[in-house]
Image (cartoon, rainbow, N blue to C red; front, side):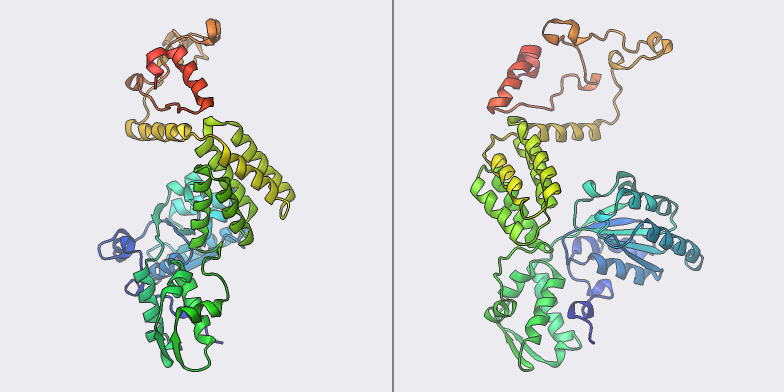
Length: 424
């Protein structure tokens, strides 16, 4: 039985690789690393079908090193350790470390990721991870710190057109036929930036033809697929577009749109915990201090869905989505923590003022630790003015209350406490 078209067309070298010029184009960072013959561990983050697995295989072939593959969906800690042991015993035969490619690394548990640390740190394996989820949230910090992160982009229309032309003219099976791409709009639209999906669609259309003379039109593509070109696809780029529309509808205070996009996800087979997780994030990021109960309700909805599952889980999710969409909005906490993080990265580890330091021993007290600290509860209103930030940042502001009804109360209290120092 012949391999699927997508597998037959998988590039074997960087010269055949389509897209991601910012990483593998002439003079780009990954290409230079590959051509040097030595690579460091890295994680590839991007949507499905943009070449993550292919790139890992090309690198292994170019470097002529053993290539081990694990799927986070089916592999456990034992499998990881077995591969690491094989890599350790086989490293003698190569100057470069064997490559361990882990697909969907975001699905690895903490213990599974922990089991990789030693091998990556000692260079027993060079880790290449692939993920469609933000590694900052899904990959443990110690492992992430040992890897470079490269972001792959959705394939552009020109990339997809190049892939179509190459498939029709160079594939061992398709090149035997007379295929004319009269119209390409539906193919590009259905492909949605995903090379694998595009080639699967092309193969389906070709196989449905009665002869070797095939004229591909948009109507032919749509009739072969027998579905709406705008249908939700939880494994493709449309997945990201729909969740983006969902979150932006909540942020924009449109409960009807929020329910519509949620319905699209539910009908498309989206996992309930994915929707619930996004609601929790939205409650903290977009509603925030304007309605602190939003985060409580989002967490309660998450718990309810995990307990009852589908189809009843749609009800608490819908309740939460409507509540968030109709709530007043504030992103002051979101902006505040990002501003504080930017300052920390810029100024480094500034010393804690002496009066704020803990003084559990006599020596520390003699050094002035905690000296001069004023206990707020000993003062009227449970407040007394003193310095809490490092000396170099003592007048810096990170949080600026916004003008929702709930935050006006916070603003007024801050003004009562700090006067002009904390005034908006």
